[in-house]
Image (cartoon, rainbow, N blue to C red; front, side, top):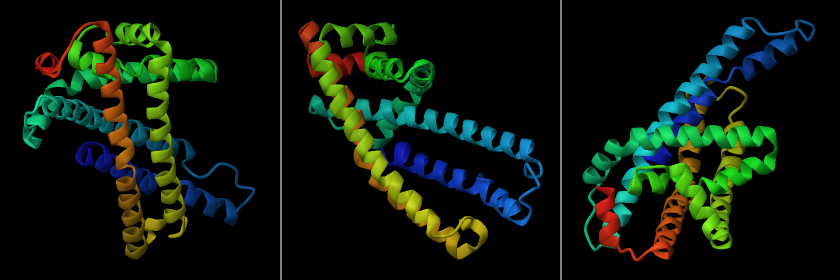
Length: 246
């Protein structure tokens, strides 16, 4: 989680802070309030969007490695076996591309649902929350299976996922607020001088680390919820699940 969740999140925040053109735009607006749009507004905005989209896609792939590797480690430990870091990452690399693709599709569906209305987006986020474990263990029809598991025991799964979601929201919102306040203390453009740049990067690193429990809660919570539903469907044990992971 440190390598595949915390570190990429910190890098993304640093990139976002570095390419943010708003300080320059604000300075130009103060100098000439009647100037209208800033110089090269369209090019700068397109560059910003491209950097954010590209970084998000790359970070999503790295995070998929972590999700797969973490699931493998937890399953190995459940069977009394030792899951080493290099073995876990090798497994994560093998399964990351497929998991990443399904994650992108699910994110698109949740985003469309949120644009239509908030409630459909929330419903899809809950109903598709088990698609990742389904893909890793069963490797087929993760969206349909996640829907089926969610509705088969609606109250139980809804409660489990709600607890996990609440922990993730709180665990990421608090560090996010601290990061915003901390980086703001170094001025509108922290990278204008080496001293403020080091301070801003240090704040981002610390707050990214503070979000580690949220990443762990999401991984462990959803994996346990999935395996619990498998046990309700038919007898299953750790050895069976470990064999399914491959």
